[in-house]
Length: 163
Image: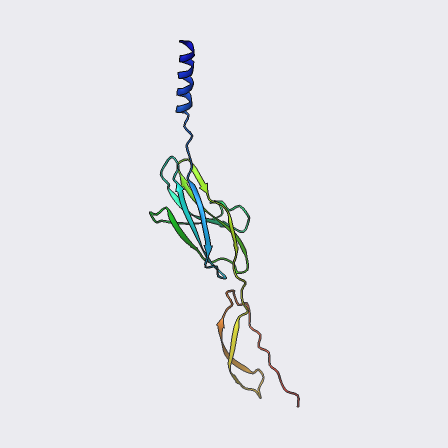
């Protein structure tokens, strides 16, 4: 009789010590990479032992992004989602992964990396030069493209033929 009581006691302890599971998440493809953005897919494979309260993509310039770094939350009801990351720095390597949080913690997908495209040289078009016989000379023009970076100054160079 005693072995049966011991067995039943162990069985009760094992079944009552249920592990609370965090969500299982999959990081999908990284696509549409530009100078300042990219799209990243994520999927909740299992919500764990409680309802998912938040899901999205986290990213960083270090190789292990966490939700304490940068996040973009997905508010859809779907288990599959795509997040558009914006305002990234040109020519920079980023590490991303999907995440989902429930009552018991946060589950992360695998880490993927990508590099944004490098900033281009700004394109400036001079449209009119006036006052050639005067100092200073006036040059009017426009900036057709900022090259996806901040323009910090303009310098106008002129070729003056020798006399």
